Image 1 (cartoon, rainbow, N blue to C red):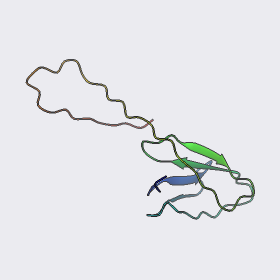
Image 2 (cartoon, helix red, strand yellow):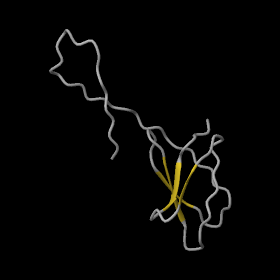
Image 3 (cartoon, one colour):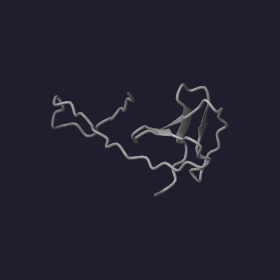
Image 4 (tube, rainbow, N blue to C red):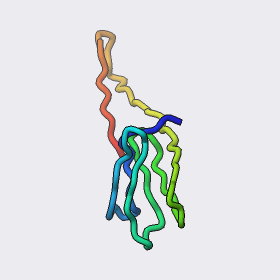
Amino acid sequence: NTPLVGVSISTLHYSQFVLTDINGEYSIQITDSVRILQYTYIGYVQQEVLIGSQTIVNVYLESRPLILKIDTQIDSTTQEIVAIGYGT
């Protein structure tokens, strides 16, 4: 239940987007034709929320586990591993 800083909130076709502030709060101006907002944050599952006539929308994002693939060619003298993450 900790607020997340920097969550991206956008309209479905990215015509508008904002980021959450230090308190996890945001404000976005939308037209009547916008009915769905997308919430994305690195390491969390993206959500699309039907907003209807709501003026306040609270969303809880589910964390996505980090899976590392380790190269089996590493020998016994290896002292460190570099992990590189790619988004999909």
